[in-house]
Structures are given as structure tokens and as C-alpha cells.
Image 1 (cartoon, rainbow, N blue to C red):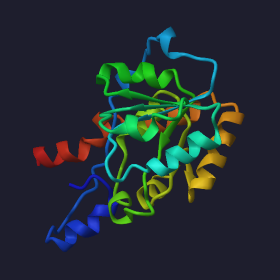
Image 2 (cartoon, rainbow, N blue to C red):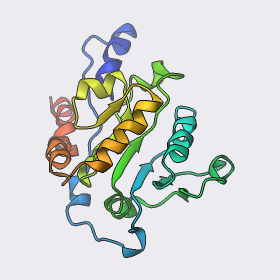
Image 3 (cartoon, one colour):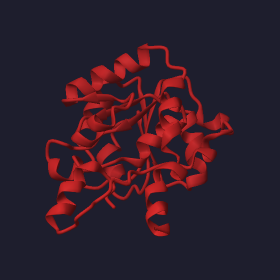
Image 4 (tube, rainbow, N blue to C red):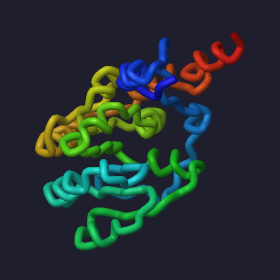
Length: 208
């Protein structure tokens, strides 16, 4: 079983005769009735990223976005060691640190757009195989998503806005914030990505 379709050929090269794509999914019940937290809401437009900050995370892109759009608040949620040094001079970037899974839906509900700023230019071999769990969580919360573009995301044909460059990333974010989004397109897409459905091939195999 492979986490993305891009890994199927890799599995075959290692001798697997019949690899099966088993993409990430989501527990949709966690996002069914999101309790809003007034402390998280603000008047400025807000973008959010939830996840890790490994070498594949494009800090240069986030810095470019923060400087180009100082009126935009960017919340970075996840293990934050060293991030204060990178973003400390930028008042519109909020380094929030890690939060519990139970807190994620409320933080997403308080944002206007979800970000996936992965560095496809420096790490194509890695990023092109990624099937990002955060994409489904953003969608389940009704958030439009702006992401850098890579092969697996293009195959998924999601409602996400995919940027080919750092400049286009900013342009697409502007378009998202200027548009009227009610979250229905994103929520409808993710209905097929509940773990009960995405894991069914594994269940069938275990019972065979």
C-alpha cells in the first residue's frame, strides 16, 4: 500500500507485484459541529498553516507573502522550534506552536484560507509524492486552499488553488480573499475522503 499514486512505480521498482494507492483521509465527524472560539477571530484576513516545518516547508515563500501583504495575518501552527528567529520581525506572522488535534477545527474555522507552502522547487522528488492530510482538514472546515503545485495534487483534481511560482501564490491568495466562498465546494469534495472509505481497500485485503 502506498500513500500516493506517485509511489506506485517506486513500489514496483522494489519488487511489489500489485501495489495499491491508499491515500490519506480524514475523520469527518471531528468537523461536523465546530465550536467557535471568539478569541481566535479578528477583523484582518487570516491565513493558516497546520503541520510540520521540515526542510520542505518554503519559509522564503511565507516571508514573501507576509511582506507583500502586511494586512494579512498568517498563523503558523505546529512544532515551532526556531520559527521565532525567522519571523520575529514580522508582526503579521503569528507563531502559535503545536496544538492538540481537538483544537484544530476551531483554529481552521477562524481562518479565511488554508496554506500549503511546500518547496517544490528545491525538493521535487519528495513533494511530488505527498498526499497532504492538511488539505482534507482545510476542506472539511470549509476553507479555500492556496498551495504550491505538485504532481500528486494535480492528480487529485481538488478545488485547491495551485501556484506555479511564489508570485502566483500571492496572486491566487488575493483572488481567494476577494471572492465569495461559502465552503460548500470544499466540504463536498472531502465527503469521499473519510477514513472509512479511504481505508476500505486495506480492510478488504485483510479479510481476503
